[in-house]
Amino acid sequence: MNALAATSRNFKQAAKLLGLDSKLEKSLLIPFREIKVECTIPKDDGTLASYVGFRVQHDNARGPMKGGIRYHHEVEPDEVNALAQLMTWKTAVANIPYGGAKGGIGCSPGDLSISELERLTRVFTQKIHDLIGIHTDVPAPDMGTNGQTMAWILDEYSKFHGYSPAVVTGKPVDLGGSLGRDAATGRGVLFATEALLAEHGKSIAGQRFVIQGFGNVGSWAAQLITEAGGKVIAISDVTGAVKNINGLDIAKLMKHSAENRGIKGFEGGDAVDSNSLLTEECDVLIPAALGGVINKDNADDIKAKYIIEAANHPTDPEADEILAKKGVLILPDILANSGGVTVSYFEWVQNIQGFMWDEEKVNRELKTYMTRAFRDTKEMCSSHHCDLRMGAFTLGVNRVARATVLRGWEA
Ligand SMILES: NC(=O)C1=CN([C@@H]2O[C@H](COP(=O)(O)OP(=O)(O)OC[C@H]3O[C@@H](n4cnc5c(N)ncnc54)[C@H](OP(=O)(O)O)[C@@H]3O)[C@@H](O)[C@H]2O)C=CC1
Ligand SMILES: O=C(O)CCC(=O)C(=O)O
Image (cartoon, rainbow, N blue to C red; front, side, top):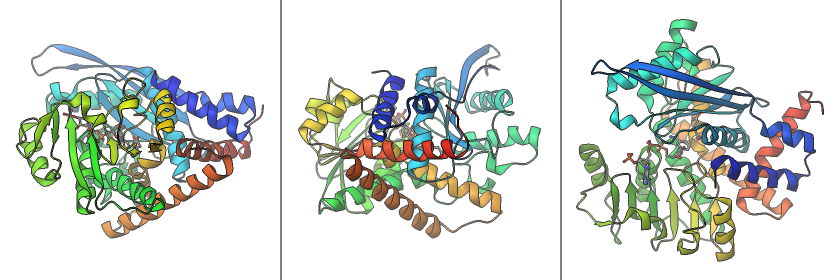
């Protein structure tokens, strides 16, 4: 199912459970602003190349809009729209004072040189600089982007507006980035998984994990789960998938991946078919790459008891229904991966205060926020007799709806 159709379907179900006024429901779904820009750059070989960039600013009822920028060849308007909408509900679930936005450029970052990526990022920033800002819309990294990308945006934006470190988060620590932001989404995944397992009398130790994606989120999740005593038995990235039922050596896999631009060829396990990774025998499945990967075609074959959505919208609504019938518990994206934007909030707060927290404080606060978001979601599950996805959606949508009405929304 199309990402926007899937996200909107979940939103409408939550609106129904909350008994939301139909006009308010319609207004909450419509994005505040959709930006599309053409970014033309000279390539290293002297030819010109053109890429389409997007920024969708979905909602700002609770504060400045917030969300990552993705560089990927599949970036298209509907998906960016869906991701921006998810950010609105996610920041509300985390109860941080933000709305939601998302951006992206349709490109294959692996095929561009560092200087081409820099030129592309600077041109994109030139085209959107007057629509983002510390109190309007604050970008961060997502798939295919990283701290360096944020540093270029910061620098380009600052040429127009003066030095403004708080205009982006997820930037390098040397430029005012927060300690702990790099690991934050993976660490948040760990905390959320711990909270879910604890409800069932279990802990990370002794559970078998399968992870799709070995980038920022997947690799940190794998490291932290291993440190907590979990056994990561299979991992995939674009180059392939590797499995070891005794547990993969994540430190060695990190080294191999950095040296070989991917996990293909890693000798600490058996190469397996990437397409069957999601249906491997395990206790906990963590999709940490693309959206829509768990769908009606593979949901019935999934053997995990728990799915922790580290990626955004990895599960289609049709798959949700199939998995619910099988008794598989899903910790939804807007809760499970909210650790990244939560520490982005800490980073923004530190920049505005001109003060730096130590990493221990960042991680401690992150745990408090993740545990609170989990508890608040469970309360919505109890009061609306719904699953965790609807618990999180009703929590987020209700908070945004209340802020919207309080600010003076009129039907
Ligand atoms: N970064 C963040 O703070 C946050 C990210 N997220 C979400 O987490 C997910 C991952 O983001 P992030 O880790 O930042 O992105 P990265 O670009 O750092 O990593 C993405 C990973 O996914 C892999 N991948 C891409 N396509 C496939 C595929 N078809 N099969 C298997 N693996 C694949 C990539 O492989 P390769 O490297 O070989 O290309 C890479 O290992 C996204 O859905 C993102 O929206 C959510 C919240 C915050
Ligand atoms: O850190 C942020 O601001 C946003 C992270 C993000 O894009 C996401 O949570 O999907």
